[in-house]
Length: 97
Image 1 (cartoon, one colour):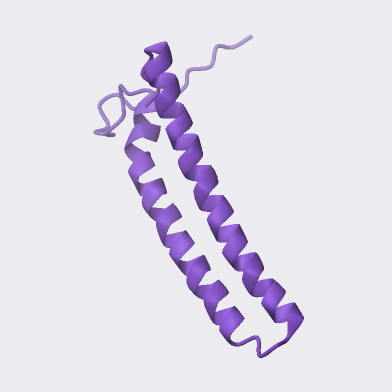
Image 2 (cartoon, rainbow, N blue to C red):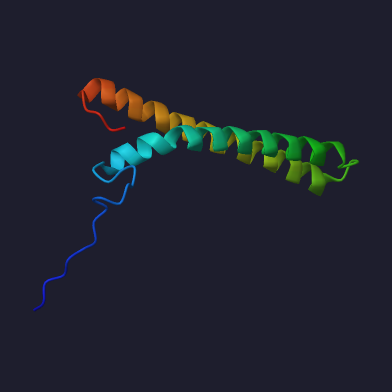
């Protein structure tokens, strides 16, 4: 059986050539949190506009409340996950990010 050599990033100038997956996630996390915040803003605006233009239509009102609920639940899930990881780091004394 022939041996397979995987390519490496050594000498390519790649920022994380000697890093771990935790380093990559740690550097990407602030961007994920900003995207989550912007997504929440868009969902709140979309839900609000949908509710204002519903004009008594129960289906449109339900859709507007759905946008608001989905935006808030998604935002809360992302930030709870972040804080759980922070708590685990403190309690166990390990560095995840």
